[in-house]
Length: 112
Length: 113
Image (cartoon, rainbow over all chains, first blue to last red; front, side, top):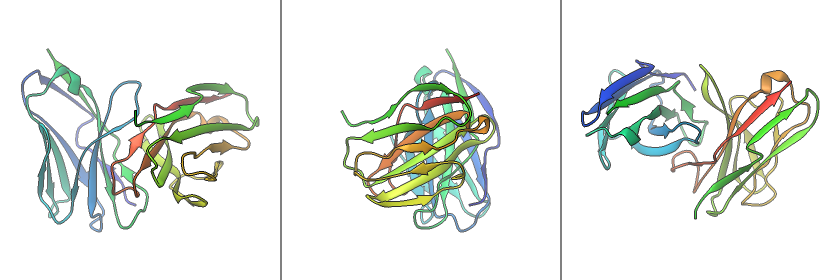
């Protein structure tokens, strides 16, 4: 698969504010997208996913937006908490079960 | 508790000395996968398995072997480790493939000198 990238490597937000983490993908054939969270010293943890036939999906305090026109994905975290501090990865799947292509990651730091 | 376990968690070895990193899941998942994580390169898939006796290469399979003789276990084998295989390794499993939530293990930090 082609590379999945991220606009910003680091993001600092005040506790209680909303966070927006962006991701660009390059393969127009990608039809499934996932966000993972990785806390220090741990393995990645699934947050939310979205299929290409949707443009928005909401979870608990998180929302993923998909803009296929510009091949852009974003993760919004509402009322950011210290426990949200982690590295966030987006990943895409082109078709079937071909390997996930992970982005490099964005480090989110929450300032108390 | 549903989990993916890996052993060892840390390993320092020398070039050429065969090693195996074990991975086990207790969720009866069909899909299992190995990733390596390197600074600046992110997570890259090494091998994956859709079911018992079914394995396939990921993006960076060179220098690695895997086997899937039982549903719960998916060991990663380095027949002749080299320093460029120094990395953080993660095993993951899911119900049916990458389009399902993948559960990751805690990671194995391998150093090859």
